[in-house]
Amino acid sequence: MDKLLKVYGELLPVMAFMIPGYVISRKTRFKSEWISKPLINVLLPALVFSNMLDADPQKLLILPFFTFLLALAMNYAAIAVYKKLASDTDPLILRSSFSFFNIAFFGIPIVTAMFGKEGVSVLICIYLGSAIYGDTIGYYQVAKTKFDSKKAWKEMLSIPFLYVFVAGVISKIAGVETPEAVKPVLDVVSFAVSALGMMIVGFQLADVDFKDIRFKYYIKLLGARTLAAAAMMALILLAVSQIFESLEKDDYTMLALVPLFPVAANVTVFAAFLKADEKQSSILVFISMMLSVVLVSAAVLLLEYVA
Image (cartoon, rainbow, N blue to C red; front, side, top):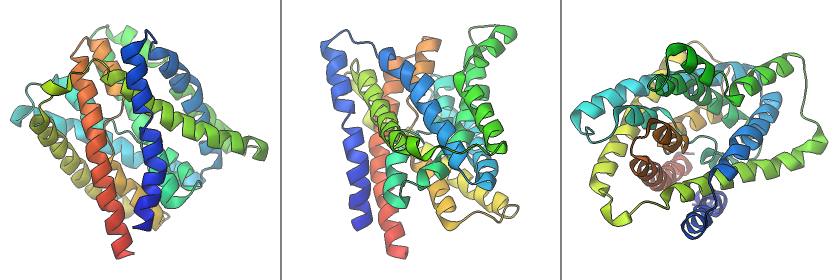
C-alpha cells in the first residue's frame, strides 16, 4: 500500500493540471498550441536528449525495440476491433489510439514513484520506440491521407524529435554526459513535461459534452485495447528475452506497465489534421487515462503483494 500511495503522490498532482487546462480553455481564448509547441519542440526533446546521455548503452539499444514492435502490432489489433465493435470510430484514429501510449506524460510520475529518478532514463529508452513509430510510420500514415507521398515524407522529416534522437545517439557514441549542474533543472523539466501534457488534455476536453459520452462503448473499446496490448507485449517480452539477456527485473516491470498506460494526447492532434471527430479522440484520451489509473493501481498492489 505504501508504494501505491507514493504513486498517487507523484501522479495525482500532475493529473490535477487537467483542471486549469479545462477552465482556461472554457473561460478564455488561450490557445493550447501556446503550450503544446514549446512542450513538444523544446521541453520534451531536452528531456529525451539528456536521458539518452544518461542511459545504459545496452538499454538504449534494446528497449526501444519492445515498444516499437508493440505499436506496430497494435495496428492489427485495431483493425480487428474496428470490424467487431468500433465501426463508429474513424479507423485511422482508432489505429492511432491503439498504437500510441502515453509513456512520457503519464509514465514519468509513476516510474519516479516506483523506481526513483534514475528509472526515468530507462522509461525514456522505452518511450523512444513508441515515439519513433509515432513520428515515422504513424505520422506518415496520417499525412498520406492529405498529401502525396513526397509531401508526406517532407512533413514527417520536419518533426524535431527525429533529429533529437539522431543527435542523442551521436552524442552517446561520442561519450557526452549530462553536466551535473544541469540535472536539477532537468528534474523541473521532467515535472513540467508531465504537468503541461496533462494540461493539454484539459484543453482538449473543453468542448466535450460529458452528458453525451457513451461510457459503455468506450470502456469496451479501451478494454479490448488493453487486453490486446498486454497479450502482444507478453509475446514480445517472451520472444525478445530469449535474445537479449542483459535486461533487469525493473526493466521488464516497466515494459509490462506500458499496455496499462492511456492513449497519447497527440491522437487529438491527428484528429484535427484529418478533420475527424476531435471530441471523440479527446474522450478516448480522457477515459483511457481514468481507466489507466485503476489498472496501474491494481498492478502496483499486485507487485507489492508478490514482492
